[in-house]
Every structure is written in C-alpha cells, then in structure tokens.
Length: 362
Image 1: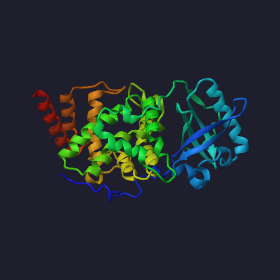
Image 2: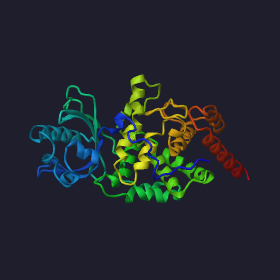
Image 3: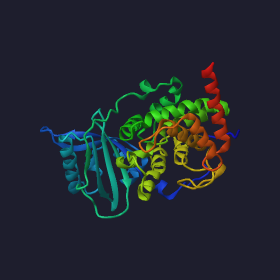
Image 4: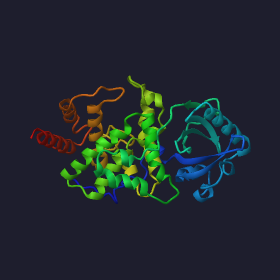
C-alpha cells in the first residue's frame, strides 16, 4: 500500500485561484457603555488573512479596539454597532450582513458564543451594491459552543488529535477557537461533529490495516474532524435543504472545501491538514472539485477521507438522503471504485468492515 510523506506532500503550491482569497477569522470581545449600549469590540484573536484584509500586522490588531483599525470607522462603525445591538436586544446570536472594506465587498457573519464573545468571519464576495445593514439576518437559538469536545468524544483514542486543537499556537491565529468554530458549525449543520468522530473511528483502524505512520494517522483524524469546517461559510438554508440543489446552490456548497482550506492554512501545524481538507471531494477519475485532480495526484489522506465520508453519509443519512444498509453502502463503494474512489482504499476498507463483522459474530 502506498505511503504518504506528511511533511513534504504539498505538490501544488497554488491549489486554485479562490483558495488564495483572504477568508478572515477573528474573535471579538464586546465593549459596553454604562447605559448598556454596545460601543466597540476588542480583537482577541485572528488569522493572518484577517490581518491582510485590514493591511495591518497581527500585533497591530490583537488587543486593540475595532474602531482603531476599521477604515472609515467614524462613519461605518456606529451603524454596524447599532445594527448588532438591535439584534442583541432581540435575542439574536447570529448576525449576517455585507460591508465594503477598502472597496472590497465582504460577507460578514458574527456568531455569539456562550462566553459572550463573537466569532467573526469575513469572506470576500463579488462586487456589487453595498447591502449595508438592510441585509442583517439573525438567529435567536442559543449556540452551545462552550462544551469541551474532549469530554464529548466517545472514543478516547482520538485524544492526541483533539489535544492538538488546543495546543496549536503562534502566528496570531485563532487556534484555541477551533473547537468553538466546530460547535458553531454543528449548530448550523446538525450532526457534523458526530460525523467527524465516526469517520475518525474507522480511520484509526484503517490506518493500522494500511500500516500508515502515527503522525499521518493523527493528521488523518484531524482532517476527518475538520473536513467540513468550510461549511461555516455556506448558507444554512442550503445545508438544510431536503431536496435536490440547484446548479447555483451546488456551486455554493462545493466552495466549502476552499473555505475550509482558507480557514486552516495559516494555522501552524495544520498546513497539511488544510490541504487534505481542500482535496477531499476530488475524484479518482479527475471529475471532482475544486482542482480536478486525478489518481495519485490526490493526496492519499484525501482519498481515504473521500471513501469514509461517503460510507458514513450513506449509512447514517442526511437531510437530503435516507440512510441505507451497510450491504448497499459497500455495493455502492464498489460500484464507484476506480471512478469516484481509489479502488485499493475501497477494498482495504471493505476488508476492515468484514473483519469487524466477523468479530461481532463471535
């Protein structure tokens, strides 16, 4: 079975054009007046892309007030704060709007955590009329994002990979908020976290079967947990749509691989994982996305995730797809072997499932 050099496997330095657009991620702490009005935000954490959006080094932003760094803060920020304050008064925990920053239009999404901080995502969109504050959307359900994933994880063997989410540091990146981002995503797309945990269970056993190194196995577990993190940038109504997507909606949801890559790539220790996330919907015959990679051009970890992702979706179902039996899922994997999936990985995984079935019959 093919081995993969997890230290030197970045064969493509420019994966795709959109992957290099800045996808800003940050954490804000609200500031209040004596009368209880929202007056400003303190920037608590950020990724490098967020700093690039504002043409500032990270140290110039971290710990500083938003009003010190936003262009045109004197005219734009009061309206933004007023719009957010109104939604807070209405019990909102999610706010979405569009803003022009240095002549680039951005989608601005803010998620309130139960620690009373805000996770903030800035994604560039096509140029057009500034939607200002007329497009504010709000969600009033509380987002339970303070739960410790390490407590919830049903398989203790995932501990080393989970700890990396807490220990990765440096570079002015929002490493300590990755678990919160995952919890926000799970609130937005129910079952995402459990889907990743189920995949990680199979990865550990399949990695032993394929004789993969401990380091690569840990990267694979992380990639399984994070592979859908880019769905944070996809509209909730698309994620929850129970019927077939339109061509435009399909294009939007396919962007989640690039969103995930852009979110993770600047986090020290996750560069490889980011590339595996980018490539997990490539197809073995070259008809996948976002780059159209073919065969062994696709990183081995991404090929593994593709098989396990499809199997778990088939056997557990989604809003748009009822669950099917293990036998039918195996038949579908074999049917797509050599086209959608790497045939060697499909057979290795089916052999593993057969071993588990025989062990359960004993």
